[in-house]
Length: 146
Image (tube, rainbow, N blue to C red):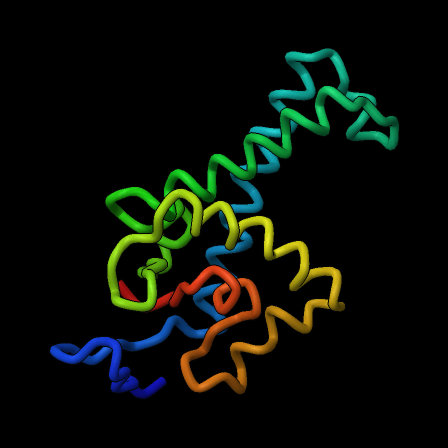
């Protein structure tokens, strides 16, 4: 993908992350959060939730783990989760700086909207001029090559 000259980055050219990079990072991060969820399930004695049972404690704890995993790392100094680091991408605000914890939190929960819309929110990046997904737009974020 060609570097895009964003007017919001007056002194640099930014290359957006590709769909493949973002998908790969998402799969790695999903694996990490999923394993953490299995560990939490074992600690709370609710491995039955893995096999189709429902345990509200595990559901809430796993939700908090996922939220903090993404929000803390994307608003941190590296601006990237483990999966994003592995694929050489990071999340920035619209000025190229770090997201606030609030923006990263909003971006995380806005992914639900992107998902509910039959993944349409994710595919928006394929035709958006800044390669932003719906949740990126709602949070004021860009995903770029590091």
